[in-house]
Length: 116
Image (cartoon, rainbow, N blue to C red):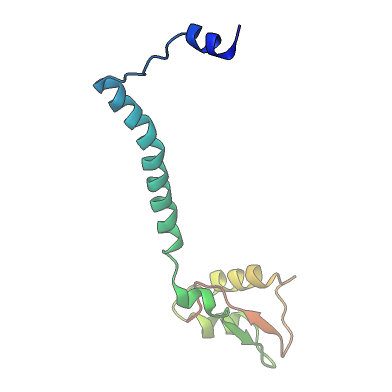
């Protein structure tokens, strides 16, 4: 047999027909991941824009301990309207102070809640 004879005996190719319902299903299958991707991008982008550019670039507020100052006095200066015990506890936690003692000249980072 020759190549021409093989081509003549091959089965005729049928054309694929898609009904209206099939086109709608195919369109839905293609569009669904696109819609999910758009919603995911919109939801994840909203969290990124919620922060302030001023807060991201500014350094944390700090205070330098003067001779004779205690954490209680610093707490009264930093947040006079707040409970000093809470402010002292927050300063100790932020600065990882052991025992709550401070030295003159020591720089303390202020908690974000009390920073101006």
